[in-house]
Each structure stands twice: as structure tokens, then as C-alpha cells.
Image (tube, rainbow, N blue to C red; front, side, top):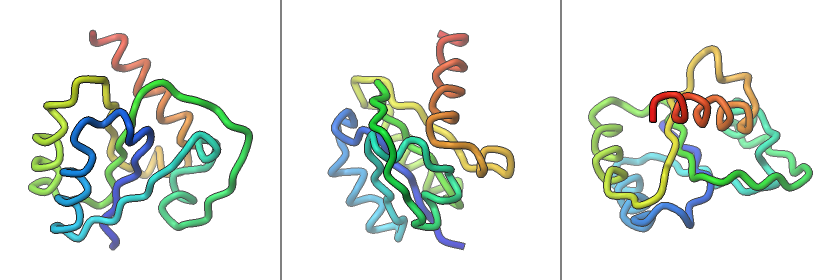
Amino acid sequence: MNTKIIVYNKEYIDNYDALKQLCLMMNIEIILINNQMTQNKIKDLLNNKIKKSKKKKLEYSVIIFSNVPSLQMDQILTLLKENTTLCLKAIVTATNYNWTFENIYLHLLEEYQKNK
């Protein structure tokens, strides 16, 4: 299985260059997505079957982990703790694999707002 992370709004991740280097060292592929890709299902993003759609700007950065071992995920999460803006995070599951990126984003945002 390929180890990947999906990243949205990388410009809001303070230490994105360090994240990129860490992923390179750990052989984790980074899939960068933009506003025209938020309507794609997670499975399509992971399988490089990306379609562009109407632009939809989402406010926060997001990182979605796919098949990332826990030790490597811990290293990435430690790096992201220093971020000055909100970065929503998720792990691909059997349930959300068929969701659109935007649906995961809205679900994460709702959870964040409940737990603030």
C-alpha cells in the first residue's frame, strides 16, 4: 500500500518545507490539492483520478493521512503542532474513503467547533 498524505492550503502550513522534507525522507507521497479539486472523492484523489470543478475556497489547511504508520504520523503531527493557524487533520477510513474532500473538511470543521 502506498503511504500518502493529501494536503490542502499548504500556504497556511508554517513549516510546509520541513513537512515536505520529512515526507521525502519517510517515502510518503504528498498530493497537493487546490480549490478546484475539493469536490473529488478521497479515493479519486489517492488514485490520481482528479477532476477539476467549480472553485470552492475552504478557509483552513487540511492534511489527510492514508496508510501512514503511527510512528511516522507522530513525527508529522509533532512538526504541525507549531503551526500558528488551524490545520485540520484526518485519517482515511473505510467510511470516509468515498466522501468528497469538501465533506471531510466540513465534518472536521464541525468537530473542531464542537470541541473548542
